[in-house]
Length: 187
Ligand code: AMP
Image 1: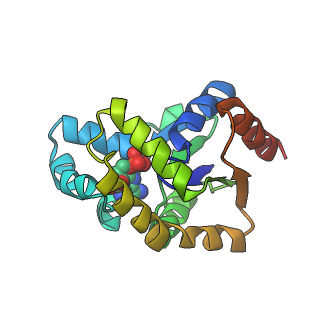
Image 2: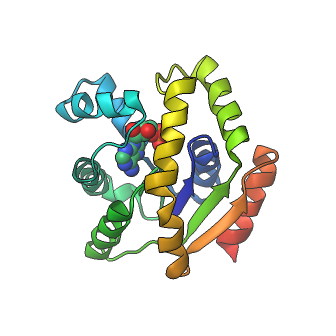
């Protein structure tokens, strides 16, 4: 499944709970990139500038990284995968379909966490106080939200057309939101 939503919508928080309950394998492309940056790999050095500016890492680069993650962790994915922060463009969604098809699988559901923009900004500014993430500052947050609207939002239509998108109210307590997600998954 894909957990979908704007920066600050709670994808990471809810992914942690999904892993615990369903035993999914978690792939957060943001976490993968931050790990590559910390290890100063070639992929990390390339990604660093895009992340710092609040822009997307180019599709071909992130698609290659994702393919490697899928191949290197295959045996841990028997219970399913939760994709968090991927896909972020229609190109990436098409590539994901292809990559999963080649591996005998597919996206079963896309759960969209819907949160209004004022709350997203408040959450991200607040997270920035403790996250240590250099992209959690007001200027970069604004840029990330613009990128979300321009490049990522069209995916809602992409996944609505093939009847996979399920929008969830992403406000309230962490547990309330999780309950809504579980209802959708079990449905
Ligand atoms: P996240 O942790 O999901 O908020 O991602 C942090 C940053 O990593 C994003 O703002 C992008 O710069 C980069 N990133 C993560 N996932 C992707 C992706 N699927 N495509 C392009 N860039 C990504």
